[in-house]
Image: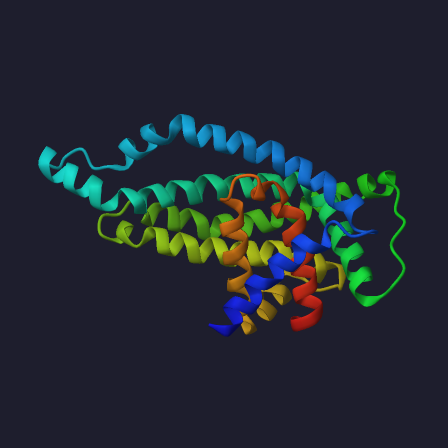
Amino acid sequence: MQDLFKGARYLFKGFGLIHQKGIRKFAYIPMAINSLLFSFAIWLGLAKFDQWINSIMPTWLPEWLLGWIMWLLWPLFAGLLILIVFFSFSIIANLLAAPFNGVLAEAVERKLSGQPPIALSWQEILKDAPLSLLNEIRKITYFLVWMIPLFILSWVPVINLIAPILWITFSSWILALDYHDYPMANNQLKFPQQRALLRENRGLALGFGLATLGATMIPFVNFLVIPAAVAGATALYLERLK
């Protein structure tokens, strides 16, 4: 439990880091990408929410029982839909911001270790963009391997009662993996090595991921989540994992 809180605090540390000199110029583009995508996600969720909730409810039940179940389980189903929508948009946002996140992680690492700030041109960042996107696609493939079975289980009667808990745990773990990839890849760790290191420090990883997941669901705060999470994951890696 202590590790959960310690891991969560690093996200808040990330929010403070992204506005510091030598870091902020690499943080603002991911921030802009995140703002646009999550604005669309919020609009889509508000427009389609009732339709999605009704599609989840089993129509074969008697009306009186359906109403009772709707009252009892509505918060769980609502939480599940919110998680799916925001998690999906987080994947898209990270895919688009990937060319900048690796550079941002390097800038944060240099700041925390007392090294001179990096002086990269935007041409150099964009030159490395194809490799960054390929790495993101590899991560997304790994995520989908686990996400698809979990999504199917979410529709199975009885099991779907605990689906929101499973989604919260899964999403927290995935977000921890995703954001720690940037500083760890900069330090030559491959994806299997990253997973092994985070498994050894599961409490810290889940605490960080859970805080990141919660922040993505807070209006306006979620606009800052990507750069803050990259910065926070970099600090966590340097101070606790490396």
